[in-house]
Image (cartoon, rainbow, N blue to C red; front, side, top):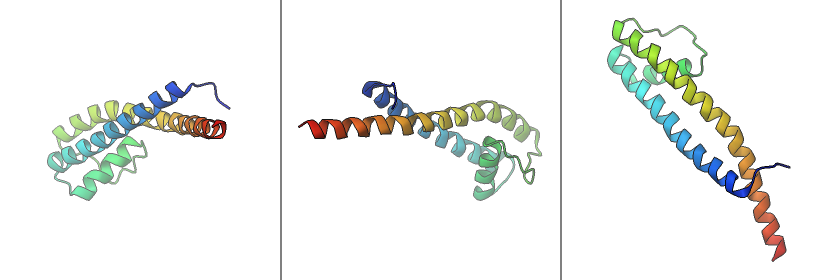
Length: 111
């Protein structure tokens, strides 16, 4: 099925939890920054963060202030990397979950 060990699978699951928290903090940080820099509502700030970090970029909300533009430039460079790492680890975590569950089934059958 897979050539990863139980220990590696557990490490992947721990990394997933950390990356999930970092991703949520990144989205929250972008939301709050856009609320303050661009005078957006909570919903609009959150929406902008999600649309920007997923690289969808509908274009309905764009930064207009110099501070907003500078923030978004750096936010996207850092944030897209974090989201990409999270998605990569999400897939690896699903595989790790299978390895751990199969290991538990085998140990339950043994004794």
